[in-house]
Amino acid sequence: MCTSIIQQAKNGAKVISRTMDWNQLVDSPVFIPKDYEWKSAYDNQLIKNSYSIIGAGHRLFDEIDLSDGINQWGLAVQKLTFKNGTNYPEYSKNGKINLAPFELPLYLLGNFRSVEEIERKISDFYLLDDQFAQRKYKHLELYYILIDRTGKTILLQPSGQPMRIFNNPLGIATNTFNFEQQLGRLKAYLDLKPDFENNKLEKFTSRISSGSFNGKKTPPGSYTPSGRLFRAAYYKERIDLAASEKQALNNCWRLLDSVTVPKSSKYQPTYSVYRSAACLSSLTYYFEEYYSFNPIKINLNKEASMNSSVKFYTCDSSVR
Image (cartoon, rainbow, N blue to C red):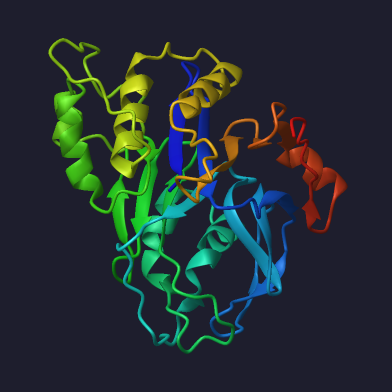
């Protein structure tokens, strides 16, 4: 599951937020310094990151399994579940950066400054099944949403190698197998602008519709991937535009309220174990676990000035 929502303030500040929908909390906020070294789980290739990162993740093997984060250049990456959409090869290729699917956020944030740079290098890295991997990581059905300070927003879908790239000016992602089809279905809920319908928007925009809702459906209340996508898009069009990064962050948190999955053990195994937001201008990261009413706030520049090694942060679970 999971839902990603982006907000842009009138002054250009951008915030990418998300719910992490899983059956238990395994991640916590983490700082990863520049020059961090790790080995690919597939072939033990040594990789040295160039840039510092703040995000959410946990230790796995001799590295960090990073679910989402932002680097010192304002590039942000999130991974989401992509059930039945992945197609990983079994054999590596010479001359490629051979990676387990869970390693891609760590690799991208550690080594790239912008979405455009990643697009140019997309054929250099190769996501693989674990059949012949040095360390087993099971079949991980994942895909990725990326945004940088320019507002360029894309989805990377590993339905083949090299991965497919989709522009995502909507600034929302859930777990839909056919993203283009879901965008087409948005017409039932929103009066879409012609440039959006004709795929002429290359970057995230605060509004994709005319703002008229006459004759349109009200989005469903379900927590299915489609239900969450339509609901998030609908409320994103109706919410007041933020004037500043702080207001954009607040917008994200309120929009996430509409797609946050409550814990319901009797009926479903997954719930929103945490919510997070990364502010691209100030390089500030917010993390709130399910039982907390008090998100923790971490600034990447401040942490980089004080720490030269990996640091995990304790969360405040104020309600138990």
